[in-house]
Length: 536
Image (cartoon, rainbow, N blue to C red; front, top):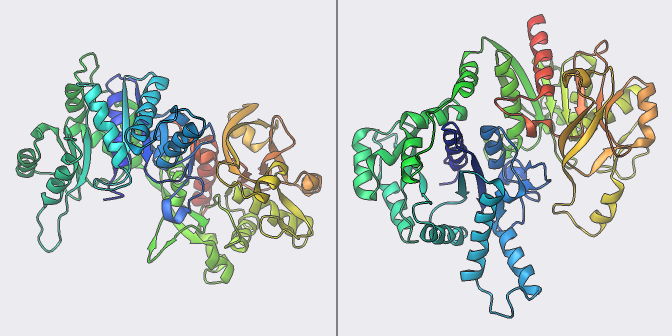
């Protein structure tokens, strides 16, 4: 089933193999026909994770980078839409020499080429490919068939790992293996036999069920790995190693030149994660929460993880609350209730829903000296609020929401206007890593340890309007970061003597935060939140 933990299992496999001294690359396959993840609704699919290259990808790519502690490239992500588009473009250019182009072999072979290119570009010892979807899906059948062909072409060099859920019905109180048996049978129908089964469940797998699965699924008992629910996803690699998953994989791949597992830094991080002594309460004022009767936090996954990394590093545990901007705007959530928080974050987003609630939150944080961190859209809210209530530009706004605002303090990038006019939405924003010069003597310059220039990832169409920069500066707002190659302001802040932490960034710093390398701006934000908590 979806959401069973394939992405975390893949990231954890990468981690445990790298802990054995191997260079590892991770590749994600999304079987949908979107060319990339950029045009999908966050409440439907979760967060869009942007690579340095600017490619908009699935949130699993973020987990990959966080577990491996390194950047991944555009070769490491593919969708059915990408593959089909490349095949059709090639056919239109007579790349197939006039042949009848079909799903098999042409699309399948294009998939294999992408798998092999990802491995070649990374030059890694092992490449781990996650095929999204579930066994039996029509949409991922060609990817599984491509993997089968690779298995035949590279005998002894390809291993199949299947992640399957073993339910424990509450009325029975017994773990059931039959769904996994059927899943293996379905996989066998593709001509694929799993070498390893990762058995996800609420409970650890016992010896009896390992033996039963081994017999019924033709998998060695030592290759059936127990994967019970754990407190944190960052415990998963350590949990896998309790069942000696890396030994099973190295044996199956006939890899002999490797070291003993070295989880030193990772174990230190895990210890901090569990041992934090204090608590900071962080409110995330967003709008991508509603999914029927449930709350979906996946739309802000990288923000949540970035908060955790910095909090754990600083010896505290974060308590994160979801604050619906629409409820603040409508008065269902009283603005005064924000005073209970040690820090407020307004993350990225698009559209007008809840915008006034976000502006109200920015104002309350400024006036009550609550640490405020605005990410992309959160920067826009900061600037609009300051323009309205400090500069006195009544009805200042972003042209994204009100094209006729008398004071367009946030406006669309000039090169974006033509793209919007022709409805060129896919992959056409300002995307990926751009350099940013930091002004001397500012809060952010200090947070980045005095760095003159940084590189951060972007995903937006609208920017601070240069026409209003001077007015905003004269009223006390400091623009502490700018795009090195253009006249774009990337960071706004209030000086320390005016506010403990009031910062907005046009970029998304959360995309580069990692367990072993927490982001400096999130570190500074959590420090300010700890100080507020202590003062309270």
